[in-house]
Length: 434
Image (cartoon, rainbow, N blue to C red; front, side, top):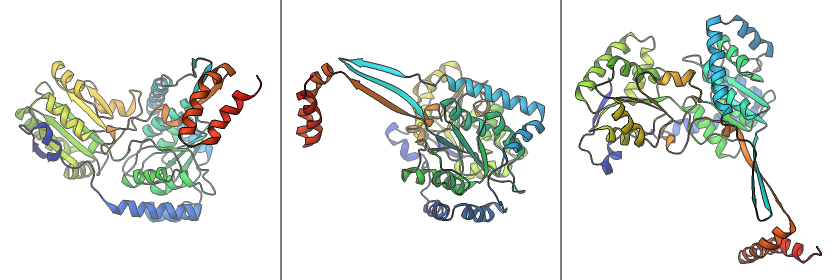
């Protein structure tokens, strides 16, 4: 069910060459996404409508969901689900409020620099649809933006078979406090948010997970300098579960499955240094996948991106995890082994430690955003945070004594670089009557 990789005895220097590639090079999505972006940029709403009919199979006359629809959806949602949405929202908001940075002031020899984190004017959040509903992603993207102080938050969601946004997703939008909701999915949603159309105002930042087409669309519009996009690639979901003989095989197996059920394109790994644990978890996977209501999605993920790695010890388990740089990393081991693995991990979107901390808690209620780096981008990217919706502005002031002190250095450097006006801007001030 999972492709076996026996890495025991492989030297550290050769480990990377024994692992499958992080992502497959595929020019198809790149070219297809470029065509969609160009169509929306030139055709606006009409292009969005045509692309929605082509890809989603529905005719959407207007993209904007009436504001009262979200409030009505919240009233209609099951009370238990509403309570869960509100509990999740409260935890997400509380966690992200701890990330807000107050203005800071630095002073040296008459130079004062005040730094402030200024929110962008408008943010776009993308929430996937199709295989499942993701009201949790509404909360995990919109709430950090609102906590950051973004004045306007627009949400794009693929329409369902009836051409509407699912009620549960609308209810989450009401809980989060989203300003507007549009029934647009795929790369065309990213295009509408980036370029703007007659009915969608352009945004400054686009966030949220999606399939390879959505992720590629974000990468392309960011490359144009059109919008800000977090450096991490938020694509199909991934998990690595590391376990030893202390783990319950049934729990380890279900945790390998839990991200795989998002559908194909992702990665699901199980790593252990114990042959008996490997056999027990493999047997559990067979049983649990056969009973899964999302069996086709899980099997598709396993077929293309499912691996069982046998390693020598916790240190090699951490080394493999660092090379894969997974979105989610679970460590279900004895305290000593868990400490060895976690202490050596440098690249992962989020790490969950112990038998009571499945990644699903992070997906809904732990507090940090579940929009995490995939496709190896955890090597340099991180979870979505308040900082992704702000930019640092530095306000610099000097008195005359400070300019007298530093001015000669500015003049010397400016002249060395051949920038006469730079030097003159200081020299004229220093030569002027005080």
